[in-house]
Length: 253
Image 1 (cartoon, rainbow, N blue to C red):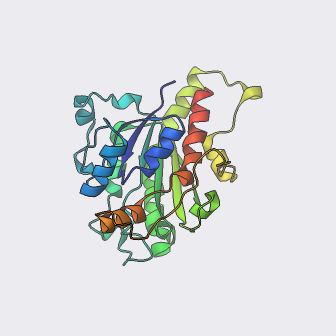
Image 2 (tube, rainbow, N blue to C red):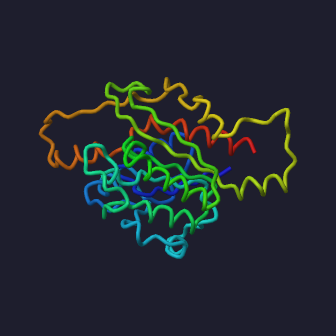
Image 3 (cartoon, rainbow, N blue to C red):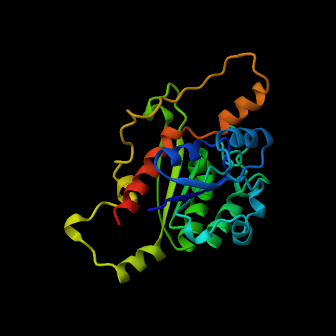
């Protein structure tokens, strides 16, 4: 089975690296920041970067040779500044808020899965209003949604870096399978959502490199850009279990 991944708000590719570890092929990325885009071009050779998320359409994907109907999962580490506890917490009134564009792309492409990542402030700010908006948007788009929060420290890092992860599965695909396939109850495997909800998602990281953060001045140019991109990046080990669980589930069908 070919597992294809569309990356939105890609940053320097932390989420995309985790997807690669789990066996997904990232067919395209979307990052507007110049420095982060250079990192993507260096580390993900040949993968198109669409730049501004506002420009992504199914027509544009097809023009680039990408069939939207083959995309298994869309991911988005959408900007955290509107929600971060370190900022003003303007949420959906912040001009940097891109959730509206993320859900637009999801509605247009209708992938089986969506994985979202953001700072813990998304959950704690404004009495969870911003968080509930995202859950409601996904639900109204026909997705069953689950979420969890854990830190980089939970996967072996020396820093806490709490992040919230949102996993959504298309109800349409589930209904189609109910109609077209007989359920093999004896061999039935738990879905990604049940794994997430029962805290079984944090699996062994023994075969993956331990994440580290380097903030020293090593004499390499663009240090400010590098630190900014690292600060916004997703630690791949934090999100890898989600991709791995989805891959296992899809390959079991």
